[in-house]
Image 1 (tube, rainbow, N blue to C red):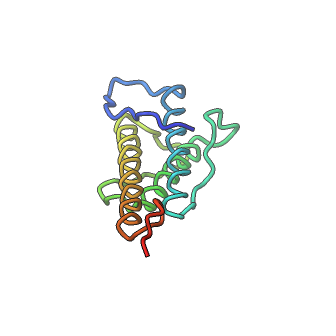
Image 2 (cartoon, rainbow, N blue to C red):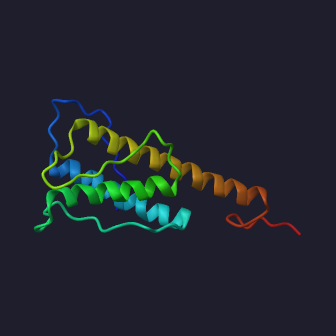
Length: 137
């Protein structure tokens, strides 16, 4: 699964579409989960549904995205100004502000994972080995 640039310029007049919008969000979540599990060793993520949702109540469908986003935010210790929501049956679902928040969080987590990975490589190099095999006796 490849990373796709999130849409971080949602406006009130934008329409949410399952394809490509949900597919991009879902794909980015799956990509970040895989990277975060390898980098942070914290693979606590729930199942991500395809948008067909096969009888899954709509609130549960949106909550799965939010739960995975919260787990990723926790894994990279994302700043507290980023937060997730939960939905209950019959409640409103994502609006453009939620989509802006979700895709902004995905981009921030992506950047944080890049920084963590870069820091790990620099630390291994500075400490004489690990990733680059540069240990000198």
